[in-house]
Image 1 (tube, rainbow, N blue to C red):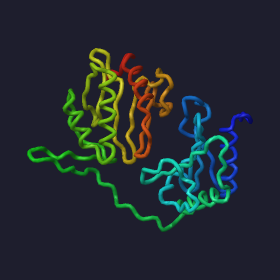
Image 2: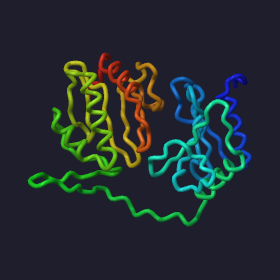
Image 3: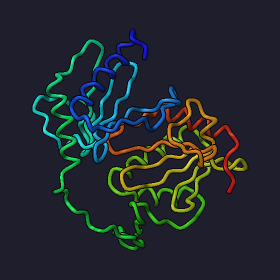
Image 4: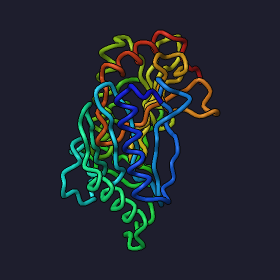
Length: 271
């Protein structure tokens, strides 16, 4: 740790409060960031994720996985307030967080994760039909809410997929599709394996996205050649890298545009 970096010092101070609040807390590093691929993001868990810690240029962000349902009488949460699940605390240089209130928040999160009275969830259905307009066939949602669209080339099946994406994900799909078309004017589109694909004629596919239960996964097939490298990936994913976008995430349009333009200029994936 660099003791002169206020962000690292702040994160270290909050880490100490977290571990003091719950001595049984599990501390791990996950979801490696391109800027520090050997370290990853600190994650604190006890019967489930309690919170994560990230450093940015102007803030240290502590995100509570289920913060929206936690009591916060001291109003520590000041970021990611729009979503239904997560809440975050952004700490700027020179700011101090009430240690007692923060530790109480950590303990409440642990208690929530440990509660035996969690509501039982109904068994997931393999498919779920989505109502269609007059004269149109209903679109079936597969496990995780992913629309089942027949394989086809062109913009039309992609728009059918996007329209069937459930809830907030449909707006995200339209935003991604418009961004890609804006920055790659001659983009080729298709739906394959129930996912929209984007590519260049004669060059292969450079990107696809796919609906999962809590997020949308955006995959770059030549992700390891992008700069910065998108954070998602495993040893088995070869050159592919991805980002997972959740409901209350703030999509960085500028960074996404850079990745899209870089990916479109590279040899694509040919199935």
